[in-house]
Image (tube, rainbow, N blue to C red; front, side, top):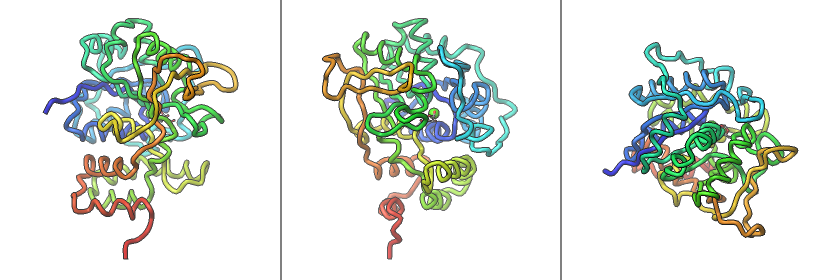
Length: 331
Ligand code: RIB
Ligand code: CA
């Protein structure tokens, strides 16, 4: 199999962790490194959480690199209210004693690795590490084979302001530099934003099925998502939790699992619309498209991929997905 080399840039983070699990369960991917940025959790906490997930997956061979501990310009604001005091749903799992990040800084690893070409990046947090790479070595950034970002939103309302999604709100200057540089270099990012990730809800019913499929992995997922489910009920009266980041991995694995349109997209850096991703769907600005803006997703296909890859769902149970998603109990 011709495996695709990929770097996962993330801020673990509950849904980042589920995304890492999906990537590691996908044989067509060669995860050559994980770079961590401050975001959901402060940098060192995020690094430790990456170590916890890699240890659970039996993949402590994958190197973890320390990236940015704060946004380019703005003050760092964490999302521990959503991800818990430990950044992993207050599961309070121990950091493996043998785990340690690499000494090489993330931006150096990114520069060295990406300039070789044919390496992709799946970005699951604020884009600070990629922005620092651009400042350091724009040619290496141009060398990214495929870039997918969980971030932004088109018609869906924001999740940390009326108009902005957290990753792009947290470091809007970084997001703006990445999108502007893509435009200047003729590149394109797949923006897996809230319009599609809000459709991916881990419900109690789905979690119950996951725990039956694989009690060990199910218990790990239950532990790290309980806090997240409580948060979603408290703030949005959702029964379950939106798992944003795994969809970015799924979109990388199967690009036609999501659909949308290509457009010039810019990120607002300041003011009331800070972090807003402005996608020029009607081509008012007549600028070349620098983003593939995702607006629809095959939800059933996502869950088939997620359950099959991580939980080894048997093919003969494929028909269970629809009633689980719909909540209807089959007679
Ligand atoms: O807005 C959701 C995104 O912000 C997800 O990537 C979540 O992990 C946080 O980083
Ligand atoms: Ca994330």
